[in-house]
Image 1 (tube, one colour):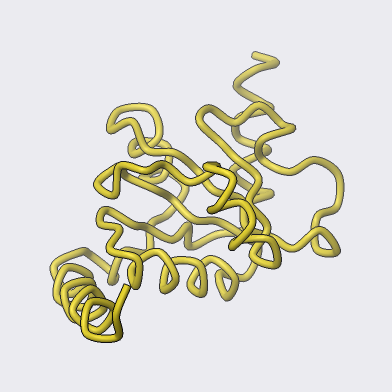
Image 2: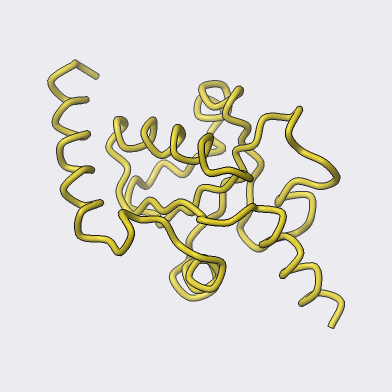
Length: 134
């Protein structure tokens, strides 16, 4: 991918983000709607040192994958990121900084329909654990 293609993708992503409420940052309710109704996948991108307990994939959050920011390149190469660049993706960590970083990586690669969970992923995990128990 050339620099020109990357810059084009970034320019398009910025314009698309401007059309989203809160520039694509979503609360837990909206994240669940995206996962359960729009077929979004959830990427828990916390580095291993920041995961206490289970990651979202281990906790059986629907359509969740654990793709640590520190392993993004390898996970991408291994096919853990959908090849369909229009698949809705919710990126999550605990402070949004790693999720925002991975969102930028994916936007540069030409991905669309990206969202960042504007809450700790551990809160979303707890919602799904409660749902599984109840």
